Image (cartoon, rainbow, N blue to C red):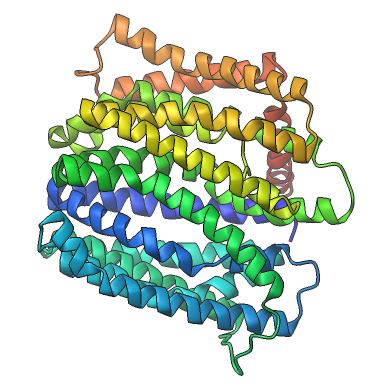
Length: 485
């Protein structure tokens, strides 16, 4: 499968999953779930995730990045994945009662137990899905993601309608893992580590060690705010934070999340061919920033009317949080593939050092912000994002060899089209309703005008993302012409 077709399948699955998940979360938030109930689920999910992240152990990256992958290595990867995953899942189950005691809330016990139990199903999806991704079979990967999203939305909505509150979200998470495992096994031909084997663990442990540090730092950085907010300010504040963070993160995943997985095997082929990585990396960076920055900046500017329209007045306290979190997400797409490329190019030790430094930075900023309340905690995420760019841009430049001049020009062009995209929203605030009173028509009008100015800006500035967009649309144009004739 070509990179374009792989990206097309990945995007289709991402759009499907986003629309389904977003619609389900909107219905649940408006009619069935309160901020406090969402906060309870978010605390449980964040706490369990801090341990459950160890399950993957780099197996997916190992299978995608290994030069000579044979049957014995696959069996070793599957066996090790199963042993580690079940051990970690058992630990997660055991931690549900201490978690409840730490937050002094018995309602966390059943929620945490269901979430923790879902991780017993994870290893049955890791290896099968990675094998399909290695072959750029993103049709299978897309079906896995779509099946998981469908299971989660269906179960969550049904149980929410039946009045199960946060347990509806917990059982939805369980159904998601079950759906992922079933579809992954189906697409891979119902594979299993039988007979089990552990004869090829050397390089897998090297991948696993780096991946464990990578995911640990990411999980702690991502979930520390929820856990600290829950401890200091309570589950209601966690609910507002989770709603804002979920909206910003979902927008990022909608536009570039799925395609990111396509680039790892694509860059592996460039590496194996001995070709320079810098020029294609600049194109990827341009595409990421030119698409994501305007969308996230628009979400930040329209945060209050968007929250009001989608979720209702009971969630309005999420709006200022969404503003800062959307800006933070802009930072984290400025240097794409910051972890994947170092692993692919055997720079794991340098990556680990920067991951620990980044984690220390994030936690320090959080600790400094806690005394000043919820909005200060969220603003610290943006400050962390700015420092994250400084930390990783120079590192990725050294290992890829991209031109600083080309990188800076690409970033400046993306910033220019971003300012053009949000200009109509700011103008409408001055000549029409302000953020508190703006309705759906004003949101759509300002967003529509922003898209038009964005496209004009891409063309006037000769942004490299425009070339990528045109090249990706060209096969679609040819198919439409063939269909019309």
